[in-house]
Every structure is written in structure tokens, then in C-alpha cells.
Length: 320
Ligand code: APR
Image (cartoon, rainbow, N blue to C red; front, side, top):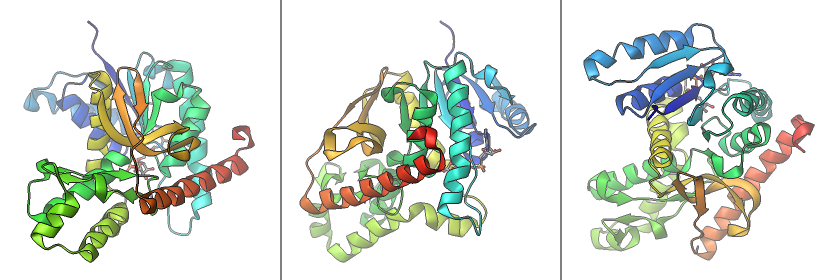
């Protein structure tokens, strides 16, 4: 059987980390694509030379030509520009929208059967635009946010309760931004609802609120520390988990930005929900019961995503 092929569009910090993880796990051969000449080729060469030391067998190549994406089983997209000082959110939206157009067309023309995972921010709008530009079925295009946001939530909960992160199953819904909805009622530690364990351990509601707030600004906290650039290790790890679920037909339920049409009162938007990932891509969206407050918070998050889509359509009328 031929090896799987994993294309990484964007060979920056996340792209390079994705390539390393995919090769180390021998998920398949890896193609790094970027518009910057030499960058994907240089990273591919450097990473290839990890093979003899780490003992992985994967061909890693770099390219500036979309034709090299042909036959890819999975495409993970990180291409784009970060927000620079003085740039408005709409400026960034305009720049990355153009990138999604080029990437979407590259995918459509070269690997229309791939499972596509978008990481580029602003995530919920970019994954929607990438789907529109690529014309792929909705179940084959998904955004990575919930796995990362939930991992941040789980990390902070594990630290607070002094337990292993392995035992924490935390859960975040909604858009990837200030309005995301960390859902305490579905978060558990070894099956014990977090609220119950908080009572046992004397962790009060105000402290749990602080953890929720830290989760919401988890990306910004890292940007503030790094000063140049944003998080890349955990975002790459999160997307790899999603790619593995697809390639291995694992039917994992992972929180991700999936196309929601009907459930959660959402019509035709990409938003963070629990979704089943298997060989058919997004195979189902699981609609869980939310408290009134969680539902209200999710609505705020969905409205924020909708606003971004209106801005996208104003910038590029072909999306309207
Ligand atoms: N086509 C392909 N690659 C592009 C394009 C394009 N049109 N435009 C920019 N790129 C490349 C850049 O050359 C750069 O190498 O995208 C890469 C982005 O890498 P980084 O700037 O290092 O960004 P990274 O930290 O990897 O994050 C990528 O993920 O989390 C989000 O907000 C983050 O949108 C950002 C994305």
C-alpha cells in the first residue's frame, strides 16, 4: 500500500513543527509548501536529517509549487500573516482572505480528495473562506481550535487540582477567540465532574472563573511572553491529533470548528462543536445539552463569527 501523503501549506513555525511531528510518528510522507522561496526546502532538508537520529522513515520535501500537493491525503493550512502592530482586524482579514483564496484554489486543482485542516487565524472565518474557495465538501474541511483551547483548559485545571493532565477531559465550544465557551459542566477529572471535585477540594467558583478567563486568553498570554510570534507547539500537536483521527478512521469526538447547519441553532457556519472525525472526515456533529448561560455564551460566540463573515463578504464580494 502506498504511503499516506501529508501536505503542510505554510512552512513557518507551526508548519515546521507539524512536519517534525508527522515524520516522527511516520504518518506518511510530508510535503512542506510556502510562498517564501527556500524556506520549505531548507526546513525539509533539516528535518530529513533528524530521520537517522530519531529513526523515522518519512520522505520530507519542500516546494513552492502547488502541483506538488497532488495526491495528498491530508492538507494542514497555516499559511498567512500574523497581525502586526498598527494593523486592524479587518486589514488582517483582507490579507489572510487572499491567502485562503490562493490555497483553496491550489487544493481544488491538485488534491480535491484531501481532508483539510485549517489553522490560520481568524480561524472560524478562514476555515469558512477556505471551504468556499476550495469547493470541497463541508465534511472534508475543518478548523483546528477546540482541541487546542480544550488542551489549555485541561492544563490549567490539572495544575489547579494537582492531578495528572492525563485524567482531565476538558471541553471548549464556540469560536476561537475571546468569546470561546469553556464548558465546565462537561469537563471531568477521571470521570468526576469538575464542579464536584472543586467542592471536595475547596476550589471556589471565582477561582474556576479565573481558569475559564485564562483559557479564553490562552493564545494572547503566549504572544505576550514570546513577543514575536504566537504559539506553535500545542497548535501543531492539536492538528496532528485531528489528522490521525482521520487517517486511522478513529471516530474520535474532538472539539473543532466544523460546519454546523441546523444543530445548536446555527445555520451554515463554521463554529467550535464536538465532532466525530473518521475516514469520511467530519462524520457527525454532536449536539449536547447546554445550560441557559452556556447557550447564551455560545450565541455571543456565534454572533461574533457571523460578524467576521459579513466583513469577509464585504472585502471579497465573490464570497457573498
Ligand atoms: N501561501 C503559502 N504560504 C504563505 C502565504 C501564501 N499565500 N502567505 C504567507 N505564507 C507563509 C509565510 O511565508 C510563513 O512561512 O505562511 C507562513 C506562516 O508562518 P508563521 O508566520 O511562522 O506563522 P505560524 O506561527 O506558523 O502561524 C500560522 O496559524 O495560529 C495561526 O495566527 C496564526 O494565522 C497564523 C497561522
